[in-house]
Length: 154
Image (cartoon, rainbow, N blue to C red; front, side, top):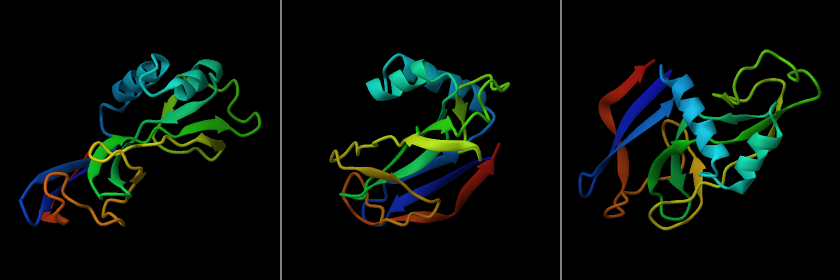
């Protein structure tokens, strides 16, 4: 299930649309992301992981991220890497290297270091209603969720 919500700057009225979760294009999105990782678009550590750990997976869920430094929002993939614990998933019928959430038999190998497009600071994955105050990337004014403007879809 995917969730879309708009956030509006109280000062300049800039609108940021957040899309979280997964929808019908999940398989295409996952395959495209894995190929990008294997081509090095997300750094050598992520590329090396998928090439050397065929049993490993990457979380390709879309997330709302917020900069810890300036509060600017952005959308990106989760990109957490997982390895199966023990031998539960080794040799399984898994046909891909992507998931939308951590499986019960998986352990976190690494979390992706998301950076802010505005200031270069560290971004963290947020909830649907952000726990860190969201600031406008244009004027740094306060952003709030738009009323009656959220959509759930699959």
